Length: 275
Image (cartoon, rainbow, N blue to C red):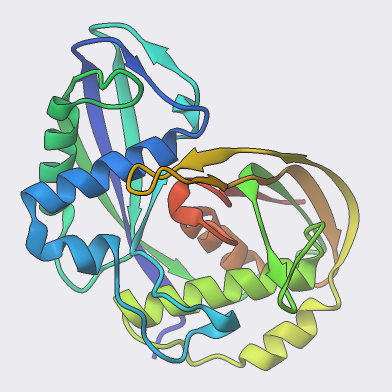
């Protein structure tokens, strides 16, 4: 079996018809609007896409199946767009066993017409672009001894059942490994045949040599219950040294999947740079 990870990168381009005002974390606003539009346009797909049922055997104590998508729209955080302004939303779709781009397009089209963000400003879906990606998870040929990671949106890692206060590499890679392997097993080509324990042990040889991170507090209000939930985490960057060649492909794949908790709400977006 090949050791790789596949996904679709979808881009939905809009033109604002009215004033569109996004919340400080735009992905959270869009997630809720998308869920409502999906239920109305393709109710038969709602549970599988937006509320997948729990299955046994998840790593790290996961109680529910991860959703097969994440939004990428941090560039819209807090944005206020006037009528006629173009904007786009990227979706990384991990369900590769059946076509779903049309389902997402129908929901996004309806979402735009019903209104987005504060004030429910309407927008027209003008284009949908789809790119299929296949990412190998094998070590790069050249040695890699240093890398840096930018944590672009609030990131929350758990390690040994506790929140990790900083992105030490063993904790970071454990969450990357578990998320990618779970998404592939549920929505892609099936379970990865790799030495997970060995990967974890070798990850301990990579040291974090510097970090510039800070914690940001963000909350969301549930439209269903009215309750306010924290969705904050740390942002910033960290630098690592050690034998990174076999981990770099996993980290690059994680730039598409996100890492840590609540990735569907826009958290855990990273950017990786080998040095």
